[in-house]
Image 1 (cartoon, rainbow over the protein chains, first blue to last red):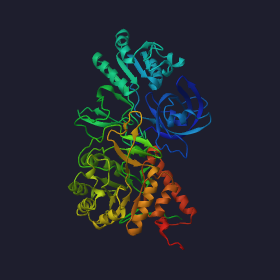
Image 2 (cartoon, helix red, strand yellow):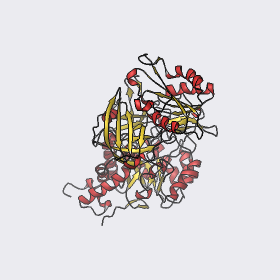
Image 3 (cartoon, each protein chain N blue to C red):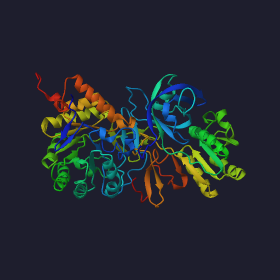
Image 4 (cartoon, rainbow over the protein chains, first blue to last red):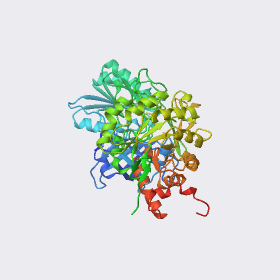
Length: 284
Length: 310
């Protein structure tokens, strides 16, 4: 077993179902042993476009849910936003098609040993890994409150079965088409106070995560953020998905979000680093 | 019985399939997917004297059949590299080609002394062609004088059988001329080709997509450039072993480079799309050579150069 990617397998995953849900596709894959070690926060990397494709890079997708039981063996569920050529190709796969999948990859959300009051915050399809996390937290006796935001109602991913594990669900949209009009960060201060939240788990665009960190700092809350940087490989070899992280020794290092993330301690991230390197930064 | 072994100057390898520097991390990342002893050698990421943050993000843009990168030689520096990465690779029994990159001609001498006598190290790749560095003038391999000076500095510090492999940029008018310079300066072999300098402009922001503006193009898009460069250099220096690379993702791709004159093949960008790409290339190339009646890999090297009636 390697020290990096220690649980990862490469498999030919069969599409078991593909359903359009709002702006997204909910896809289920039969993955044999790959699901066995998947934890909330992990992701998979999928080759797209087929044999003769001009798309040479793997696409990373957060695992929505996983299970290693049932007649189909291991199963991985993903929520796909068909934005680019690769995700559109994947979303157009039909039942019984196969895709080349590598996973589980990356870090997972840390689960507290004692029951805590957790606030889960998701932006757009960033809500995907939070439902599996909510189930685990609830099974550990945690109170789970969730807030999901998007630009408009159709871009909020909040399936009915996902809501069972949460004590409260708050929605925000930029256009006010559902829930509170505004950003998720606008809703946070009140939710933190009302629910006496002790920890924030988040997943979504970097700007949202940065805003959440500012609030976490203000309320002195632990913030586990699943960050989003574009990846070429997903397994730690390409060095493209880095963010500056302040390590325990105080030194900032450009750190790979595929192997040392995607879930990172929000307080360690030097936010606002797009297109610049913080002074004094080292290599990994 | 198929003989897959190859020779790079004084070094014999059990098979000619290698990783490409900067495309295999420290080796640990890939070892979950295959045993590193299965391939000819692992070529490590170009290491510099000091820790280096690399470039700001975005560092990467996918392009048709390729990608642009401007990592900027992010790395831990030679001290931590020798403390952490090399002992681990040695513990795996991997054959190692260490890639070094300098900011000055003197850096190459210092780095060469640090890496010249390490167990399992079967070669030194001298990266004199990385186009990702801040100063365009730092591309040693684009000028015969600086290319020669860097290689001479390594040669003065490395004796015996350890091959010195100069990695060249295709961004020159006459790559065979640069190749002759570095071979005259003491290079035992050549690594061809490094990435090709390119740019992508984001039509939504209407600015260059990479933070560094330019980046190195790699992947199948550059393969014909690699085939041409290898063919030209092999033609002018038929005795100099070439490690060929540039968009190899399948056995067919690798065979093309071998026929052009490559004695070994590095698989780079394909690993990003498929962690087991090196193994796929290794298996497919062997099958293709057998199909064509080759029982020795080395007989296929440069086979495209045979006379018309041969």
